[in-house]
Length: 226
Image (tube, rainbow, N blue to C red):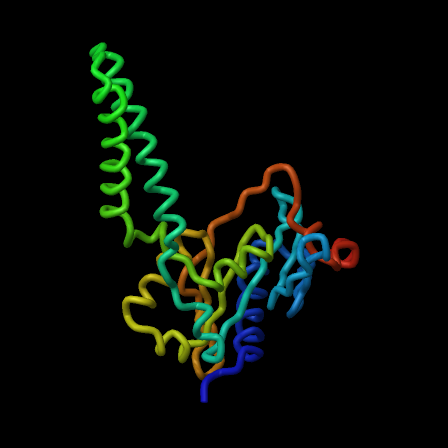
């Protein structure tokens, strides 16, 4: 029997509280399990939320999503075929522009060169891109990453139980790690003794003109508390 999602949430939240206590420089930290976004932003429920006043950046918002062995399918990465297709079309277009420019530069008048050559280069460019990049991290996604993106924050975290990671193949664990790193999402792993450890650190989601706090339903209460 693996860890429940609630135990993963609590262990990860405690770790985050300790981790961001240093950044808050002694200022009050709002910490809560299960915080919702406002209805106009979808009314989505984050499994954890921390907010504090950063000495330089104003309100600093940290969101967290927790997963256990029961939601294993959500963390399993898979190939985003739409991303591969869009990338192929984009590079095919680049090939068309390059080949069309070459035809114009050399002032070729033959119809097959003016039309056929750029068209051929489109397919070659798209095919080469697809063959070279279809297994790259940038084309990997998982349902949990899409879910985390619904909880805006300066830092975003995924908390997973150790037993759920162990159920993934070595390749899937590798893909999850590097996909989250590519997306800027941190990962916390909680073992069977409910000890949490940072596996991947998150990257800052810079939002220069506004705070992420207005996305959350308890905005006024949180502002008053910090």
